[in-house]
Image (cartoon, rainbow, N blue to C red; front, side):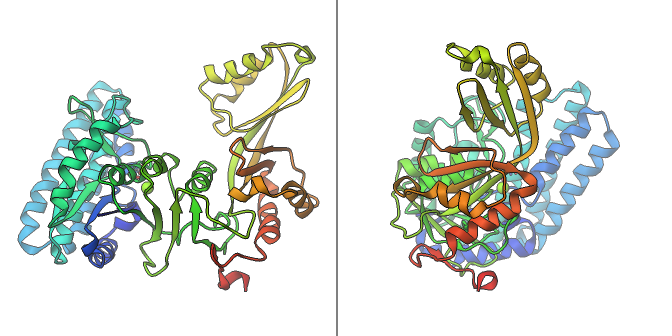
Length: 463
Ligand code: ASP
Ligand code: MG
């Protein structure tokens, strides 16, 4: 069995769903279990509907619900067998009727709880998985729909629920292989339920996580994440176009990249797969012939030091200075206690005898944090900064990486540097305005030559 996960853009239209059916059809012999996201931007739209409801904007939420129903109906009809169309209409009616009732209830209460957010956002995956099941039948496959809420059991932390792994794995093992014997199994990502049957979600972008959980639960041969890029690249394409494809990397490298904003993979995704040693493939549903990126448990021998350059924009640097810190203990605790109280995660930290610099990417509570810190230290903040992160297992074995970085960067002012505790990343902070030339310079330095076993050169740009 293999798990094949298709993201929102891969199922955003009738044409996209038809492509998915072709891709799955070619792999039918491997007994695929398909996990789908909500179609296109459906999750965002559902959340917008909820927001309109609590603002009491009835005309607006009714209009948006209609639009969303029309969208699903319009894209689903062409890929649903004629004799299933009545059933499709009925199912859409039922779901949107239910959704409307729920939203009206919210409008009356004027309050949006995490539990109701989950109830509402679950409709995206419930609908997409049902529609894709019918589409697979339309394109000649035997397909069975499995409501993920029957098998993905979670705690009650709505909007960020954590799976109960032992129970979920037991349910998956009991249900899925039998269904997959003669049919392609189709499940919605992102959603689960509590012991009491209340709908939960695993957090935004959670469908990858579902795919990984399902793969682990059924001991799949491989987990394929089908998306709209060719795989992991040597540089973030939104900052430096034309990076080379990384054919294979370790889980640890992928997790590091995911954390640093490579949108391809959700960091938590890899955990269940690592534990069961199941490879995860990143593939492009628009270009299924490209071999993608294979993420495996162990380190992959590689002639290059760096596998990829990741970035995180819009971060703030907070510099905290106090002579009272000298020789005193408890100072760091006091600082972090402030960030903790304002629920703001700290990414990078550097300390000296009398000062601490750190970065945060959630700036919402920054003013309040600074006010607190100022009670016992001098504080200055710099916004519009970016973290640049070189990732590669070889960084820990190779002397002189930092020297090459500084050499390549010439005139760029590097604000803060840290060799990650994991030893496979080297991160530093630059001003956002310097980001593009920083990444371009580093890419030139570390990827001029490529180990052909690990990278596929992007001839188009770097010929
Ligand atoms: N539909 C959910 C979201 O947009 C989950 C996912 O796409 O992975 O966050
Ligand atoms: Mg997604």
